[in-house]
Amino acid sequence: MSVVSQLVALVTGGASGLGRATAQRLVRQGARVVIMDLPNSHGAATAEEIGSNCCFAPTDVTKEKDVMNAIQLAREKFDRIRLVVNCAGIALARKTVNKDGPHTLEDFNKVMMVNTVGTFNVIRLCADDMVKDELPPGAGSNPDERGLIINVASVLGLDGQPGMAAYSASKAAVASMTLPIARDLSRNGIRVCTIAPGAFLTPMLTNNTPKEILDWYTKLIPYPKRFGDPDEFAQLVEAVVENPMLNGSVVRLDGALRVT
Image 1 (cartoon, rainbow, N blue to C red):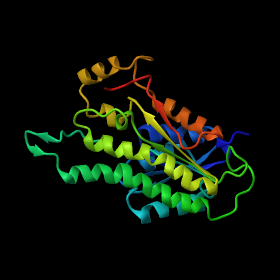
Image 2: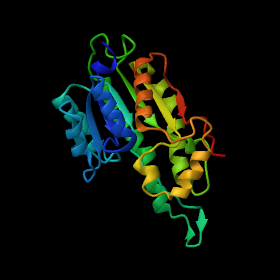
Image 3: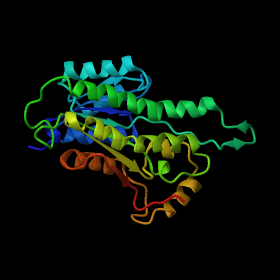
Image 4: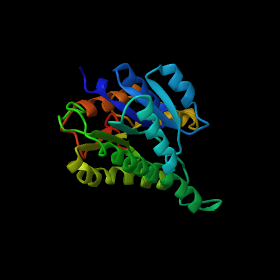
């Protein structure tokens, strides 16, 4: 029996993109999943499509009450959570100074609030829930493991580009807090890792990007010379779950892309 098949997971941003693909793969492998996404998202339809081992919790990740409600729903519907995958995020392209004036603090704060503060909010509340009760043997890939938290950064948090100050800062923060949080939670038997994806075929990338930019971006990827499929991200999530020594790491998933 695989480790994944024994887990109850929360997947933020699960209505689309990387989160949706992750929820789909986890359920296919036997896990039970709560999708967390905004009330006006396609979360309910996605959960219904995935099947009875998936449900939807309308959630703004920056709001403590919403996250606590999702944790409670997981307990009521399935069991206590043992895996969290933080895929929720937003992107904004604004130069520090442009023809309309300086980058607004409102826009900068919004990106930081969702991508960084929202991720940390989910981490702290879910980790607190994970440490409350005793777990039976085999809760994770280590015999005494209480849980695993996987965050999503970005190659743009490591190799910043023009117009991406807010997004790059928010994702760099997610990458940077991985190791200290992993060390904080090590005494509780909770692993923490972060995946830094490159260019993947998700609505965040494709919906607002002109074709000529997408074609140019593809040429920057050494091999394989294409955008990633969201299920390839989900495959790495599964691998992190199954590998007991992965902890405190930021793993690039980018086809050797370096956007410098």
